[in-house]
Amino acid sequence: MRIGDKMTSTAQNHSHLSEYQKGSLTLTGSVALGTGVMIGAGIFALTGQVAELAGGLFPLAFIAATVVVAFSAYSYIKVCNKYPSAGGVAMILKKAYGPGVVTASCSILMYSSMVISESLVARTFGTYTMRMFGVGPESWLVPALGVGLIAVAFAVNLRGNRFIGGLSRITAIIKIVGIAIFAIIGLWVSGLSLDTLTGTDSPGGVAEGSTGGLSGFLAAIAISILAYKGFTTITNSGDEIKNPERNVGRSIVISLLICTGLYLLVTLAVAGNLTVGEIIRARDSSLAEAARPAVGRWGEWLTIALAMVATISGVIASMFAVSRMLAMLTEMELVPHRHFGMPGRIQRHTLVYTAVIAVTLTVFFDLGRIASLGAIYYIVMDMAIHWGIYRNLREDVGASAPVLLTALALDAVVLGAFVSVKAVSDPVVLLVSVVGMGIIVIAEWWYLRHDKSGQRQPEED
Image 1: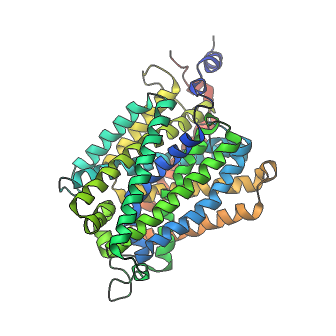
Image 2: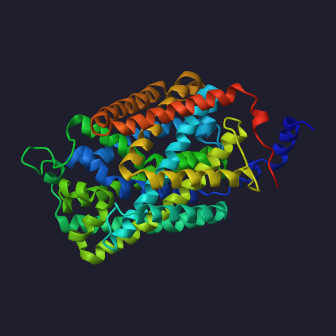
Image 3: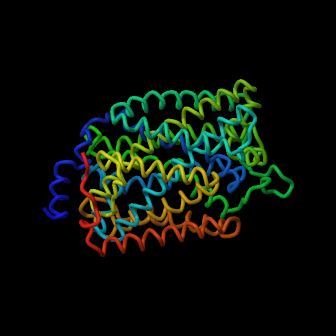
């Protein structure tokens, strides 16, 4: 039997899709999955970085990001309502552009941004954990703990959908209630006034250590988007959600509303208890720093414990979605696949690949650069989604052209501002981003020009 024939037969019998449990995620479970990723990455990891760009206006940057993401979510919801699929983003791109270089490259950008987010959250876990022992984020123990978290998340993901769904519901309740309590106490203690949003805690009129200005605020929105991009985890779960034609959109909207409310409360509480300069100096663990003046040392430890729960569940939920996305790309023959001697099916292999890449990023990149890479890759992919739907799918899925073009324009504005700011403050991260995207496009072009079936190995039992 020829390799290609053997592959076809094997794919029919052993496709990773057969491991999918259609209808295994309820509406509550999918909302928990989405909020699990968003809350894990967003408020704990990014508050300091957003303040560094937007100054005292950083709470408003989070809210402005909600508007940008709301327009973006419209595109995903319209397509997923008609074509729910476990492929999520990859499926949308394939519908819009066909199975070519654009679909493959943008899908890999999305995959990369999700793995980058896992690394971001893993390092955040290490940073908050070591704060309990008075150890700063420069310690080698921070990435070491991040690597340990990724290993735990990998093991949990081997347990399957139902276990992860149940775990996500439990941790989502803990996070939402815990963060809400922290925010309410912080606001009550601080006596918040509008002065906290002026961003002028220094004599020069610009918050100490922040970029400030319109460009800084728009760049802050680009970073803040990472706090909401977890909604794509829901689209990547696709028809694993019960009644996906209705519940995918509902899950996304509910998740975004929950996170927006929490982010607003928390950022106002932080702004009320710390100056922008103090937030920037704390940077990678600003919520724990804000808890100290609000509720004392015990409050700081409880905040750290809450951050640990949030980051653990965030990595687990993210790995659940991103590994399945890579498996779908493999089934679509948009990426090559090698077993490297590993037994089992493609889905298990993609979990290994995802974990290895996340570990590498966690070890070699700091939080700031991880977030920057994630923001650039995600927004570029997001723009490709909007354009593809506008050009090729809007009539098929009943999407509004003005809404799609608005989403595209908003992405372009915040990405342009972010790139201009980073060109001055950290040109290395832009170089890494461009080189990375170039490698992805060239590699996909090369792969798709050759006999794909001859490059993939048949699955092993």
